[in-house]
Length: 293
Image (cartoon, rainbow, N blue to C red; front, side):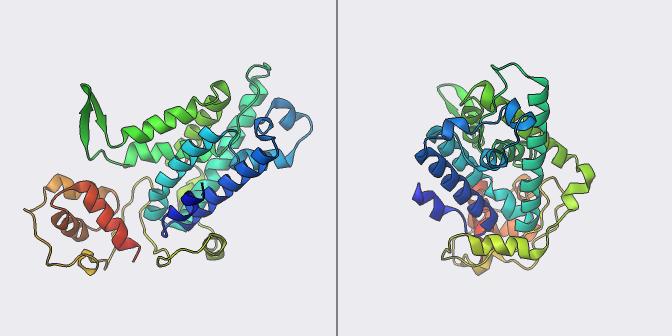
């Protein structure tokens, strides 16, 4: 598990801090043998309010399989922090966690049946809120077939999410659905939440809190998760990828448009595609790496 602490991208300090906190909380309660008791119940909310349980339910997974799938998804969704910046991504995390918790509390108030009144713990709200922009804003770049069944490069993320959603059956489905509702509210810009920002010292705190890495400090990408795509001015791909590399044919317009829709400057997108020989996945990696320098 320590390997995951170090592979999280340099350009996503908030994601790195959240992954580390989630892993540490899970290990801590697991060692104490309390993992199975972390889920929220009706009595926890409307009986004797237990603040420690609320905090634990945000970070700690109740089992090792949930931890592995959850951390994998959190790590993948770091792409959103890279796109909108650590400050706005911190707002997205806070909004997703609070909104999903409120939905869970409402569900617990309505469903008092002992068979369904326990909600499993873990950052389900944040993870499944992230599936909303993942579904709507991340394009499919590759299709392939396995035993006659069509899959895309996004299929593995959906499968990991489905596994996590069904990991504890009713106990995990409920917080997963609450997370999707929270992500939808963010998408709809309720209370103009997408324009909200924290003071800069908040994200600076996360940068200092996370374990140091060998990369450069995070840059400030400017794309909103749900649209409004300013360009990354002045970031030339040639800076990191020499012009001596063999050039490919002129990139297709639809490939350039796909990268532009992800928040990259049109000229940089074209150059990346040339260097990647029109492989959109490689071009995306080139552009993301160029951002981090």
